[in-house]
Length: 283
Image (tube, rainbow, N blue to C red):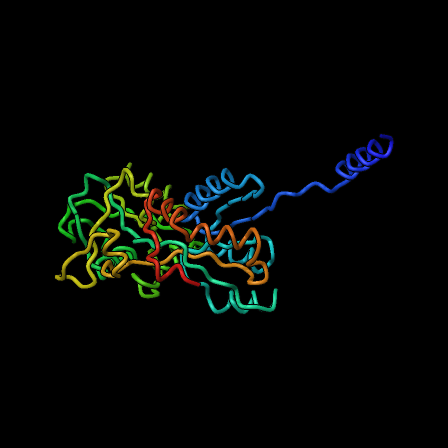
């Protein structure tokens, strides 16, 4: 009897002295376009996996990738491809090229006020607007009112994608008002009948998005899921997560696999973006 009591006491003490299992912590930083989506992913995943804590912050794609290089974040969200200089910086920091995961598709949309009679523009017209060559809506068939430009800050991947693919590397007009995120641009455009801005497809509630054609006179394309998946919409893009390949394991690997699974991609659609087709989920 005494022997059994001693064994029970030993087991109890062993349990008390055993180290507590610590929760896995994942930090995510970067794209403001992706921040609401990333927060939703984190919320749902953490509810399903209480042992995993996920902290999500924005700041812009460039900020996230800089944080990845300086080892201040585990995952860097980016609404554009990583640049060569950023890859070089990461190789110097952790001796490896960052691992890239496509996590969603987006039709980068152009937004105007709901009362604006303009419904479609070409890439050339958009370039002329945002570089300041066209300054009045009447030049485009609209009302005789000045065009008010709303743009993103230069650390934004959306800013860089738009500058590269629409402005062809030209500078934005100095009159463009810089706002931190797409949500702020949508808010500004919904209040300003003269305004025009651009941003991710998931933020369009309250504003009118325009159809966009590659060339004036050609069919203007709706930023729909079908047109983005086919690449027919001329400002289609992928949204990415970058990380040090050395930590692409355990809790982080499981989380990224879930993001790219049917359950994670269901959230993509619920947030207004477009799920990855199956062939893009393979890695």
